[in-house]
Amino acid sequence: MSGVCGVAILGSTGSIGRSTLAVLALHPDRFRVAVLGAFSSWQVVVEQAERFAPDLAVIVDPQAAAQAREALRRSGSRTRVESGDEALAQAVTAANVQVVMAAIVGAAGLMPTLAAVRAGKRVLLANKESLVMAGRLLMEEVRSAGAALIPIDSEHNAIFQCMPAGYLPGDEARGVTRVILTASGGPFRCTSLADLESVTPAEACAHPKWKMGRKISVDSATLMNKGLEVIEATLLFGLPESRVDIVVHPQSVVHSLVEYADGSMLAQLGAPDMRTPIAEALAWPDRMTSGVQSLDLTAIGQLGFEPPDHERFPSMGLARAAARAGGTAPALLNAANEVAVKAFLDRRLNFTGIAAVIDQVLQRLDSCPVKALDDVLEADAAARRLAAALIEPAHGAFA
Ligand code: NAD
Ligand code: MG
Image (cartoon, rainbow, N blue to C red; front, side, top):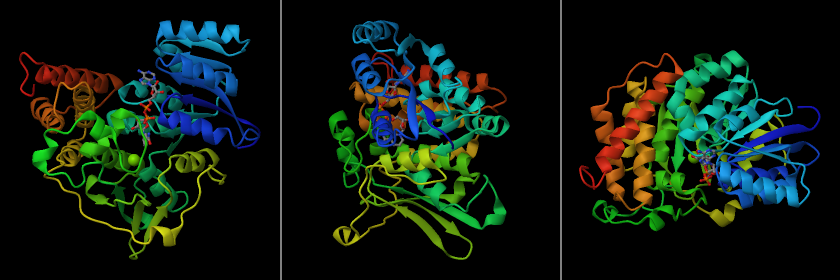
């Protein structure tokens, strides 16, 4: 890209948003922050706006936006503050935005991500839930708008780096036979099934290798994160679910692999630090510094690989079944998971109940073909209602 490139960061106050700002701060000659977007943490947005001087900050919650507006007015900042979901989706389409970091957590990221895609921007996709939900519909929008969708999820970014140059989803002629997603195994890799019943939100959020937001930390503990990533990989790389494998790799050094027809496997290695995929995607097809040190291989010494345990972590199987069913099944899975994870974090559901709730939702709600976005949104709403009813203390099956 020539000239200074304007970046919108959706979810700027989160883990990915902060890492993105840390990388951008190293390259003021190449990038400027044009838009910050967050839900309600207005003090953090104010600090970020004072440091990066964006044109616009969107804080979805109107009261938090009013607080930020007042604080920025007092400090003499020129950053405008807007509120509401609409403003967020509108902000990414602006002419001064070339790159959009989609780093809102959960289904809330779908509409602004879609708006960025439709506006033909370079979209750096951390918000895997939007792709899981809208699937082919989102990929078709990417193609028809001529947008670029670059994965930020460390595994998919690794695969993106290991794919042949110019690979298009489903391009059989390029000799890609399989992709292999690595999984750290999460905080409960060695915990027995019986003990998983009583693990706490604090234990689930204490990831051994990555420092992340609470929702994805719980997804990593149940391994639903890997299930969502299988679906994400099928869409990004145009492969059937049967050609996306999972291998547990506790060191989190190999971030994923691509297998070729000639027996080669290409892997991307690096420290478990999201600034690397973020810098790769921002600079692509060039490279630039990220602030991350490269690996000391002899200090690491050994790398381990083991098969995933589907008995203790049934979420991977549920996600694979949803990928095979297609249609709205991944949206049902994603919505049920979001509701169940929230209930677990609020201590209304135990850890093993998360997969049980999702399983019930997938059994009771049929997958329908996705013809339009409304089909996705209706499936999302229906799965949320059913999951909430299953968890609800007075009537629920999992209270
Ligand atoms: P986080 O909880 O730390 O941050 C979430 C961000 O989203 C915050 O800025 C919050 O203000 C914003 N947000 C939440 N709800 C919103 C709403 N309704 N409207 C607008 N903004 C809203 O989460 P995170 O760990 O940074 O993860 C963000 C996304 O990136 C997730 O989809 C996650 O799966 C993905 N991801 C994260 C990591 C990681 O290392 N953290 C790695 C891979 C993928
Ligand atoms: Mg990942």
